[in-house]
Length: 375
Image (cartoon, rainbow, N blue to C red; front, top):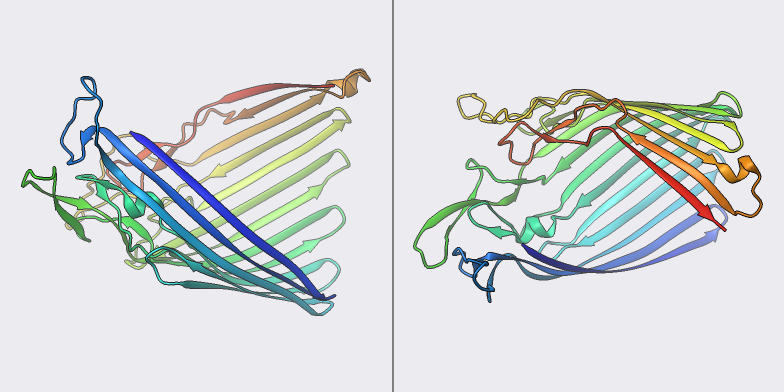
């Protein structure tokens, strides 16, 4: 496979403050993307070509040459009519090639109920444009792109309470999101493209293509907290529980863990030594297997099923120059960073095609050491 791409992005942003209690941001972006993916072991018609005997003069275009321009405009204002109340209003205009102009809004209010208590109510929309692969890929009989894909869109409402004191802060958030025009690779029950491949062979093949299909609603709660136990020790923790339902009534079928939690500490026992330890817990999601019309599972159990796991990391930095009072060196430090210290076996659900149950998630235990020297 030979792939190339070039992206060119221009963004212009203006910050305006016409009044002491009014802030305005206005800007825009232009993004030009070009590229191509060629497959030398096939000729331009899709017929096998022996690349060990000769150079292929016209390789098959798995991703035909593209040159696309995306642009967007955005504006947001926050206004504080009273000392305890801030209002946020904004919008973004997006234009994707071959798709109609789309507008997404943003609204919110922030209330300062007391010196220690604040509340937020926010609503916003966001979008994900189909990738170049989803738009333009052409690899019969595996899959085909779709240039008419609409961007995925998500609308999120959230409300949050924050309580803070000099040594600690806690926050509780409720969120609810609605996603529509989700981009999936089609199944036989959806729609397939029937083409002649290889070209000139009179052989017809059915190709799954990327389509917009269905919607999903997710909601959950999140708790966050941080406390300075002493000048040397800071402890932080968070936990999130979420669940989702799609337009077919299926619950938690996207593989997202329903429960995630994190706890950790940052400890500086002496001026030249810093220590950070964090453990993240990832629970399991719903059933991600595919079933036939009779309710029989068709997903192959090729690997261990996805299971809950703990992911422990540690980061230690020792400033040797400060310890030894080396004035001749600007910097002399040692850093040791470890990941997955429990050496958990991590498998993620395979939710793109659901042909197999899981794919490898993260690597096993790893420890990295760095020496930093500066004059």
